[in-house]
Length: 232
Image 1: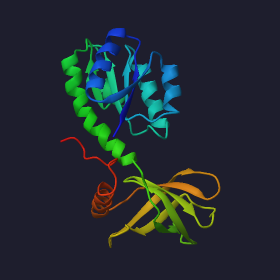
Image 2: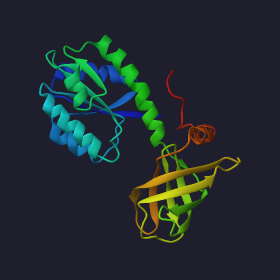
Image 3: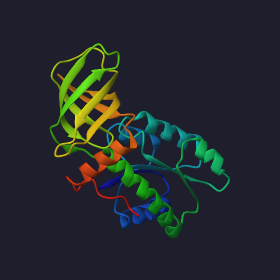
């Protein structure tokens, strides 16, 4: 399971330390020296973590806002690298999940990034998809129509579908399907994540019951190495 990070920093020493630590933790690094190129990357590539090094807390906040606006990165782990005078409260208020203080040492960076890596892996597996065809019954939330569809891929957070027929109102639907080889029926209210050409849509689960989450997770674990276990 490959993990990727976006590092935004113009400080050569910080970049050297983090490249070394991230490499040791088997986390890929895309480096940008300015926020403009970072925002460009966020709209085109998926990252499990975004690390921003800047003396201006407002600039870090702008990058984190761009992270949340990027559909493929809005759940990425946000890491702020700040000066000693910046309070933890300030950093957390702009959306940081982790805060590193300068000067950055290899030991402290590795300890903190090891903790962040577990969250990154969890996010990665949530986005992982298994190519599989499963019949799905969809009910539009207003109850006006039922649709039949076939999955093209399935993950813990949602699935891609090909609809038999196109419906007008797809903003919210109730999905119902059975995991192949089991009697486990998965039911969830869903929302549209994306719409493709013709009758292709991606949907996101928004209220899976805990039991259904476990059943789906275990089923996926048994069928694909992409769903590796989280770090202990």
